[in-house]
Image (tube, rainbow, N blue to C red; front, side, top):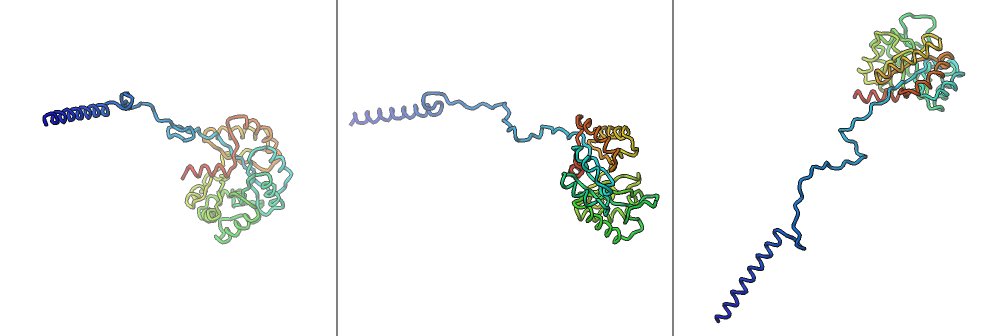
Length: 288
């Protein structure tokens, strides 16, 4: 009996010792006798995927941009090939219901050029040289809208509208609101040729929700090649100052000849030529 008790006591002590060893091993060591390493805090920044933009990375501003518009197309077509050969996105402002209005639009579509309706509007000094169906400030809303509808139908695929003359009409809030309301419905923009410093085009366009832009310079008020080239240089400087500039010239041989010389010089600089609808879309997006 005594021997059995001693044996039981020895077994119990051995078992308790074994359990204590196991507790020690698994609390401080793991298999293989190697110490358990506790990860230390790291100061290394997490890796950023190269294809995911970082909020700390500043995008380069767009290059200075010129949108060039040529007015008064529709009276002929002999300069069209030379215009396309300039190799820049010229916007053609087409007068409505002229002998070559439709031909100009077809050519522009084939060459990937944009067209806009060059809408005849009342100037301050009314002369005998007004276009047929010029919009006058004493017209009713219905008369204005009928003219606009007819003129847009004659200038196929027009992306927008600009004023031909119009120094009086573009200062009349009611006339401009009527026009802008219709352009908003059609999803078209308005280019203010800015023939009057009192123009209300910008305010009316904002009020009616129409994208609008104002010309920076007329490039060919003088039919002199060096003058036109000088105006284009000024236009490039204006684009550097403001980020963009809209230049308006006319469908004239002297203008096209001057552009043949000056366009390659500008293309070799930091300035780019852009489509007018693209520029207006970009600016409209920035203003939202």
